[in-house]
Length: 420
Image (cartoon, rainbow, N blue to C red; front, side, top):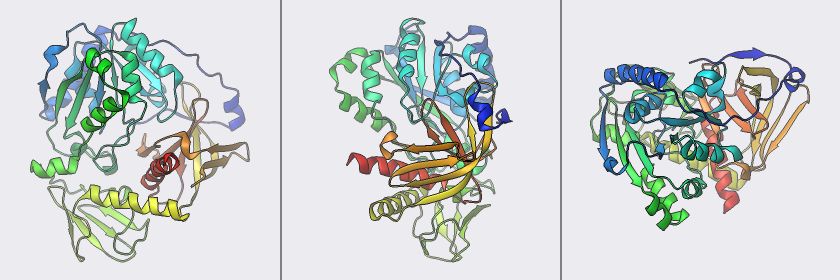
């Protein structure tokens, strides 16, 4: 999927009019039907099936909050198939509106920024639930999983559920990540997809529970390991490209400890510094080719990388500097490419400079619990997004290697350290 891009100067960008806030629009039934048919065609090819638990507790015309884990684009098609004909809004990122705002509004989408305090979002969700009498679909993880395990959830989720006071439904997907992991360059594998839809909380149960209890319950629901699921269910991935791009996740060699020298290609991932090589087998296990395997499970390797990042932060060793191309979104027409600059990240937070000194932006570590970071974003490149509701900067590192995953890990660990 691509996005409409326009190259302009930063001065020209400042002159552009920013869109006024709009209330959510109830999704049109005809368009909803078309989407459902198209989604059904794709899901049929993927052998989709659904398991329902306790859904008889929810009446057909009762608005609810739907929480869903996020692994790939097909999640939207799963939601359409599972929820139809129930009308529902979708909380989605602002970039999804670029060049197609009218379509997204008619689909019932509610725009927001990832990992940024959006004061209008809760109001929009309440408006949809109470005024429009529609349900709201939300991906509280906000970002796709990198390693097939759950990403960090916002601490505010429990408060949001308490304020909305509507039933909560949970949709857990299985196979979506295995079919199309983010690191694998949009190459689709032959994997059947399923989901489990369950009634999670009634309004009375929400009233009885504390915010902390609700957060713990939701966290348990979002606890998963897609590689472990593949292994336990003997899901065979025989495609010869299954390790392509795996270096985006496993960027650090556990043998020589060097970063940026890993290469995932075909069915192998190899360190080009020390020569250590692994095979990703058909069932998702890592096996050492010419070394004794330090890890046979990708999430364990990724967890070790997180621990290494935390150690660097605590010891003062962590310091990122890279040249970037800078893009911004100010309206729903284009993603604007405005120039180049330098992005730095340390225990003091982010610092972005660029456009001949006209951009000088600081972001404290306490500003966000995670980072909007993506691989091959809209087929432009690996991306790091910082900013606030007023200005969002989409930074594309140049000749910096695989730094996206490490930067997100560092952002999350810095936030924890600040809270500690």
